[in-house]
Image (cartoon, rainbow, N blue to C red; front, side):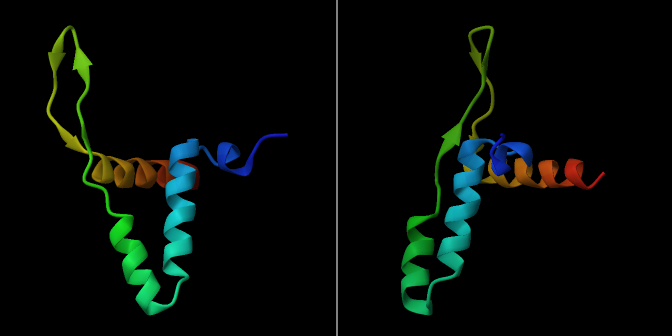
Length: 76
C-alpha cells in the first residue's frame, strides 16, 4: 500500500509544506497571520557540479515551481 502523497508524485517534504499551508489557512485571522509569518522561508540553495557552485536559488520559489510542474504533469 502506497501513501497518498507518494502516489500523487510528491516528496515527503513537499507533502508537509502543502499540509502546513492548508492548516495555516484554516486558522482564524489573528493566529493565521502569526502562523503565516512563521511559515515564510528565506532559504537558498545551490547545486554543485564538477567542484563549481551554480547560481543561488530561493528554496520557496523552487518549491512553488516544482509543485506547479508536478500539477501540470498530473493533469496530462
